Length: 260
Image (cartoon, rainbow, N blue to C red; front, top):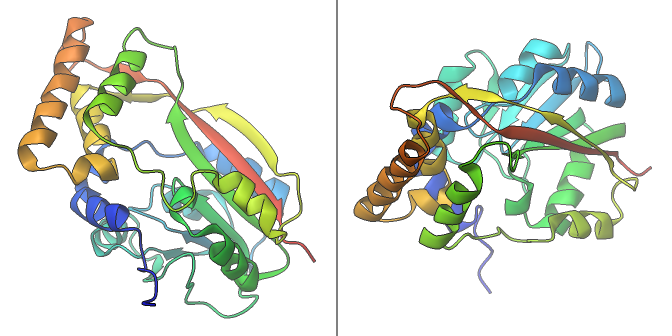
């Protein structure tokens, strides 16, 4: 039997094509959430931490700015790595996956994963993350999502996206249960959510939708039609092109210490 692909095909193609849209449209992460994580995990100067599946560095830049440790970004998709290196100059960037992290045993004190854990083959990834963590090290999972019901249009927008594109769920839709079942980390997970309001405009939302891997893999005509319909939906709700608006977003944090 051939080995599994390094990266889910939809993710590999979609995120490579959509790297520019990802950088332009995806929200970042609240600095206060990163600082709180650093305090709870216990991140100190002289330690090394990893941003795994770092994408264009949306979380990487906050880790660099807010925490005293050395930050290494690991990202398997070439297009994303190129954007990351432009966005966060000077950070060490490695080609690797959650299942094959190019670091030594016990090399880092924390592994951060933003917006990507559902793409991992969870048992293999959990074992590999535990391998590179030192004693007492921790895994932190950070996820941005729609802060639902905050605007008159967000429910319609999400329905439009679901209607036009089949949404893959990665390797394991129930990634949280799969992680707990591995026994690699102390359970239950610590969990909290903070608001992460994003100020943008219609173009920001077009980029955000276009950055979704399963949208980026549509053919050009389907993708542009969907993005035009996103814009038309917003304009029906009175949002004018170029007008600033709040894009309702929240950040969910889950973390656990490696089991001894």
